[in-house]
Amino acid sequence: MFDTMKLTKAAGAICGSFLVFLLAGWAGSALYTVGHGGGHGEGEEIAQAYSIDTGSEEAPTEEEAAPVDFAVLLASADPAEGETVFRKCSACHKLDGNDGVGPHLNGVVNRAKGSIAGFAYSEALAAMSADSWTPENIAAFIENPKGYMPGTKMAFAGLPKAEDRANLVAYLSTVP
Image (cartoon, rainbow, N blue to C red):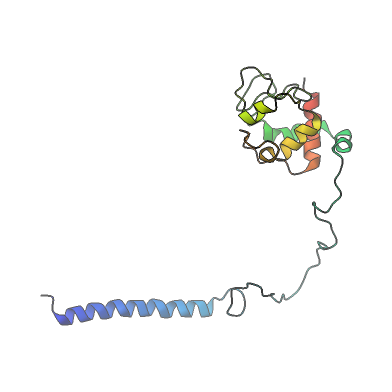
């Protein structure tokens, strides 16, 4: 039933199909080449057909820009804009005196850290309970919660813009 000729035909069919796929791959890569040359673009500069000057070389990056004093930003902050920024916080924090996933933020400005009775704070925050939530502390915390307080339960990535942080602190200072 299964003789040498059938075995040879089956092996030839398998080798032939691999050859067809190999040739199709070569033809496809020759027709649809992305990039330039034969390399992968590492360390090579690609010649552009035209360039658009965006002025990015002249503009300082955020790291190079002079640091702005947070007290100055807070003095010119807009609580109405802070209310808009608070929408990001409202998924976990409430302003009605009830705790959500996070503690309520009524009167949080200048309140002692970890002082809401009945809320299960992280060990990192409990260790800081002697401090208070000054506007500068709040701004540093909401900029990068994990960087300010390693071990915090807060999973929020942070607010990178200093203006947003100042507006949020200004809004929270108006909430009794």
